[in-house]
Image (cartoon, rainbow over all chains, first blue to last red; front, top):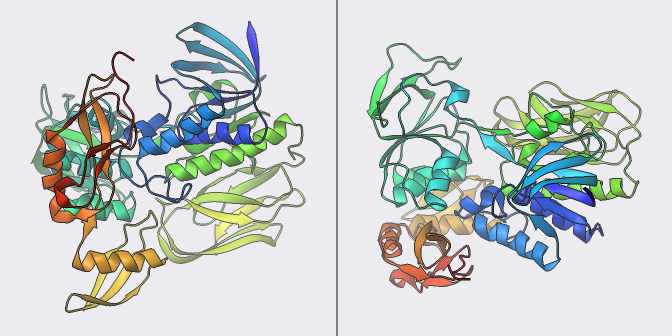
Amino acid sequence: MIENRKAVVIGSGPAGLAAALKLDSLGVKDVLILEREKETGGILRQCIHDGFGLERFGESMSGPEYAARLCNDGRDRGIECLTDASVMEVRKDRTLTVASGGGLLEYRADAIIVAAGCRERSRGAIMIPGERPAGVFTAGTAQAYMNLYNRMPGRNVVILGSGDIGLIMARRLTLEGAKVIAVFEIQDNPNGLERNIVQCLDDYSIPLHLSHTVTEIHGKERVEGVTVSAVDSSMKPVPGSEKFYPCDTLILSVGLIPDNTILEKAGVELDPRTGGAVVDEHFMTSVPGIFSAGNVLHVHDLADFASLEAESAAESAALFIGGKLDTGRNVKVTAGKGIGHTVPERVSGSAPFSISFRVTEQGRDVTVVAEQDGSELGRRRYPLAIPSQMLTLPVKGVSGSGEVEVRIL
Amino acid sequence: MRKNYTCIICPRSCALEAEIEDGKLLSVKGNGCRRGAEWLSSEITDPRRTISSSVSVRGGVREIVSVRLTAPVPCDMIFPIMAEIRKVSVKAPVAIGDVVIHDVLSTGSDVIATSCVLANDE
């Protein structure tokens, strides 16, 4: 039997919860959230550090508190959330098959918002050679071990990659009595927020070595050490620069990738640069009525930004349900000089919107413009533009059908 | 003396350029907001941080509950406070905001629970 719903939200992290709340406040009352874990909150549950909510609530709190605010609000409003429910398939006609404790469930929704988050790149993804002992963890796995299951991942730790979760875990491990020997980053500038370099590494005298990477893992049963090499400007290891670091644990914080296996099956067009769906300014994918927001669309720097984006997607989904979403156009947005990728990748309406993008190289006093057929839709100057930071450019509505190009002046 | 700092108040991580004389802040450049200047004057004389950790739970559906400090504490108090946090355990049920240690080591900061843990029999 197929159950009909006005809207289904996949995922109950910062994006999914915010989307469901927004739909509810816009009068879409028949919302169902699907969560594959046993509890709601997504990755926020294990992010016990401070610093969430500054953008959205104007105060600093931990991840579980941020999640609880959204969850409690949803519970008070009677928004239904099914936990322990994995979405197996999403189809073009907006029907879904869900595996739950109660068996297989079938739903049909007027709109679907996919807010399923991202996954961590693993050892396999970056192909570190060597033996395969225990003691190699992604930063998020180590975080779950410590913060959810009360297990210490190791005692003498090397961290590869300077992503924020890796930096947060350097501090967390140190506070709990482990020795964090060093953090190595293959690029020549750190990946995480500068504030996390200061309060997670510098405060605890943990060295950060840029332009270095792990080139071999040693150990039979358990990690016994890693070989670290300097890399040249093309990120190739420099022969002769190898140095052995004894350790029992290697933690990887080497990037996040959106998880879009479900959407791929639905025939949704994906953007190889973001790993997420190709969306228009309404956050609607190439399949009408299927929306995408948060880290499943493109990886955000802050949970707050994922929530805010999901709220925009929910506004569009509510309009779509009411048959009022402006989708008359099909204008491409292209990433020009110095721009890695943009979200959205196309524009369907005529109203002003915002373009999110990342630059390909670091620069100071960078001016970015968006142009269509020689006329400027938006321009903004950024005092500092770094690839690890997502930037936004507000633009006027488009006219005609010519491509919109975003580029550095 | 000129010294560079990174503001840690918010994720913008403003690069601050401070002019300091005899341990006193004379001027600051680069702060995106007022809080940056306030943070820097405290950072020079009395650097403070907040920390998060977890505490054992007795009789709960989970082994531990996440906790944090309610106010920043002097940096040299962080490890002594961690030792206090390691000593205590709480009885389920635990609710968000429950005070786990009041005024920890007389710093004026409380250790509070940041998630809830139901009791085993609930």
